[in-house]
Amino acid sequence: MMDEIKFSSVEEQMEKLEKQGLVIKNKESARLALSFFGYSNIIKSYRDPYIITSGSEEKYRSGTTFEQIFSLYLLDKNLRNAIMSAMQDLEEHIKELAASAIASSFGTHQDEYLKYQNYRNKKKKLYRFSLTGLLDSLQKTLNTDKDPIHHYNTEHGIVPPWILFKSIYFSTMVNFIDLFKISEQDKIVHNLYSGENLGLKDANLRMLMKDTLSICLSYRNMAAHGGRIYNYKCPNTLRVNEIFEDPAVKQTTGICQLLFVLKLLNYPGPYLQLKKILNDEVDRHCNLYPNDVTYLGQILNLDIVPHSIVYVSESSNKYHLLPYCSGIKDPKPMDLEDAKSRHYVPCKRCIPKGVSIE
Image (cartoon, rainbow, N blue to C red; front, side, top):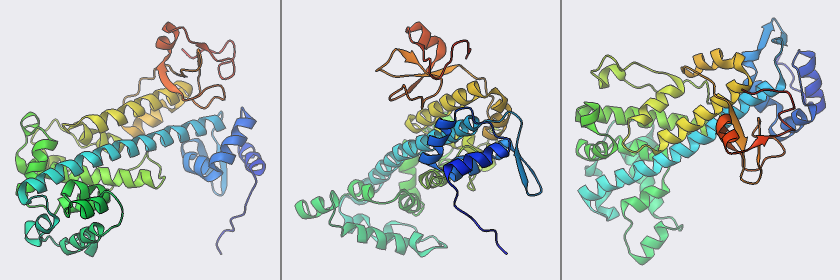
């Protein structure tokens, strides 16, 4: 017989958590967090590092607080948003490179550049990712009544690839590139990477591009559907030994693998976006909860050296320990010493007198 899942109010949820040994320092903040984001999203998704299970009984490790779990939830949420932003940036870049490769080889008219013979008919498990399936999908996209495709159809009678590709999914673009002939793929990789700096031949660059796009697409989809990111193990991996001849290049996992492949691109935008948010969030969380340094270091495959990060806004001269403090608007992370040098003063609400965050 399956377990019954019953509805419980926020008050009942908090009572259950306290019975399990979770410390709730600020009950009003916890009540708001559970009301806004839900018990499942915060507790069920991020309690694992802090809970001990014995049979059917669940107890929290001594000293674990609701605020600690919520901080990990915020870390992951901000990381998820950063991945979405970075992947959108990368998607625009990839589509432009693909459009340029196609237009330079086959012209700008859809009747020419979408000819079957221009591409490779590789065997695919799913029809929609086969050459016939993809070309059918692109033809349907051309018939839309939405701009900018509709505008180009009615005003110019032609839809160049850089306009068509704006209206397709990233997954469609990635699978379409996989069916490009080698000559067109090479045009992309020569702009995507510096083969000379990486010491890689064209065949290795093509393999690197394919693995990179698969990894990025996997993370993009996980982030888009609200999945947990910080400990996500991507099913797609980089074929390090086949791509790189340098034995110093080691296989990485998790988000470090994503950062590694992004760092190899000529265009630095996606890497820099994601790296900054990861550093800021890890610093923030580990500064608040130094006991989590070892756990996060192992999960993220990082050597974590916490910095004292606080949050400031243009509308106030106060710095805050928490980005969600009720006294802050549009919080921006800043190193504590930098905040002090700019004459910010501690917020009395989230940094009580006598509390050190050095």
